[in-house]
Length: 166
Image (cartoon, rainbow, N blue to C red):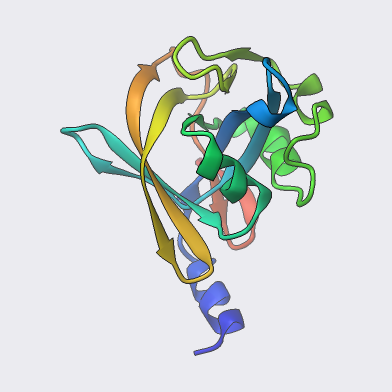
């Protein structure tokens, strides 16, 4: 099976949309905010609380998460389609302008940007990095979970587009 067939098959699997964020400390003491949209994100373990995100090997986020062990993941809601699309753009990971119009705070545990309005936000510390083909699986221990009252349902990615339930 070739990559195009595999991509087409996997496009039929609906996935939640997550914004993974961190601070790039190479940009000074406060660091530059960085983020990427991910759909390959899952819970791994309850005890200890672990999550996994798949990041393209050699990408700017992969390089950042290799040197920065603290990061966050925000599960995006149906009203955050624009945010998901903005952070899915290639080559703009550390562009401060990406966060300019996105309401966020900095996590008290990790210092990573936490997007306001997300269904939940998890602050994490990398426990393990596992090479897997053209991606790196980053396993993070959840240090803090924020559970605001949900404003809407989840944002999903299905058949190469953002979708909402209902």
